[in-house]
Image (cartoon, rainbow, N blue to C red; front, side):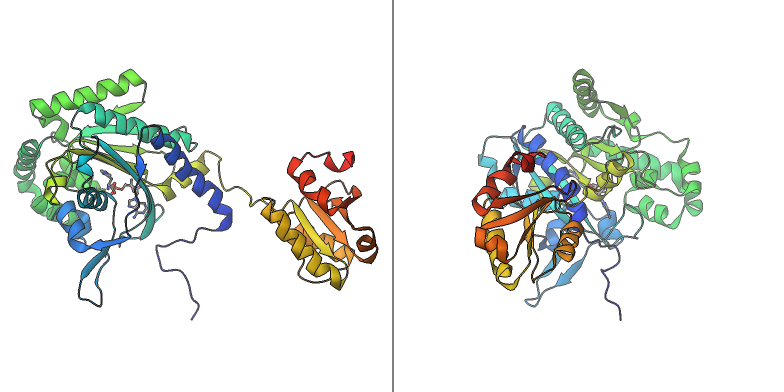
Length: 427
Ligand code: HAM
């Protein structure tokens, strides 16, 4: 049997690493300017952390998307399907409510959902996540959304769009769900199976259906945004007001419902046209009540997550694909046996000085050695045999120009560190 990565999981190859890290670095930089601290939680948690928080009707639970297993001690554990519940668990466990509020925590790492695999939808994927805990004002929502927008811009995106909605307060949700149940009850038999199930558990989620017939049935119905209570409406208007004032481009989306049950009021997504059906780069919202639900103090929260794989896909659409792996600046070629150890020792010293240096592991003739250096992507090759040893030098050759000079070992580090294209000429 040929061993392969598990379906829905991906290897991140060296040539993808620079792009990958640049997305996480953009988050560290932008979120750091807003005093968010990085929190790294374990990849698995007690299953109830997620079961309690995402809600009975969430896809994660209903469609059994969580990877839950029993360990040898009989504990029920889940690979995290998202960060929010784990971050809130850590916030409570470490008594962070005593810190100046709000506490802003960001995270990055893998998450796991047993989903149907397609472009942009994997079983192990990666998220950058931000949570702001302890402030209920619309200003905190606008700040979080602005940070999401700017993080993606800093990562290199220019065509991402924020869609802003509201799922209302719990009583608004209840009223809307009752409205949908009543409106759809006569057509229940015509709905897709998934939507019939949603109609039973969380009618709002029927709006998210991709099924064409479902969409026809709900086309004429009122949207959550039309049935907001006064407070949720004021909150929504204030968030929109800040974003407008700050010049953050967004569109009002009256039918954002989100797939997790903990949301209250503000709900938003960020989309990117051109990466296929899974065009949501990220999403989030307010989750007042969740901290308490998980056993903590009564504190509100707002946050978001974006999927790194989808952002990388979008970056590729913008012509910012993989960067070539940087080759070594110097490749050492031993022309006799004694030079093999000398080359390795010199490489070690130069690496200590921070230079990227590679060497041949065995004696080479000059032609083969230069070919090795070229294949490794090196800028210079340095060769040494008996006559160079006698004079205490290496023959340094710039591969692109073919220019060659003799250099002493102690001259190499400063020369390469200067890195000037004409460096060899000045010798
Ligand atoms: P979510 O909408 O479930 O929200 O996921 C956020 C983003 O993660 C999605 O927009 C998508 O880019 C990415 N994502 C989700 N599932 C997959 C998958 N199977 N394959 C690839 N990418 C995926 C949450 O996770 C919430 N915890 C966000 C949040 C934070 N709300 C409040 N705070």
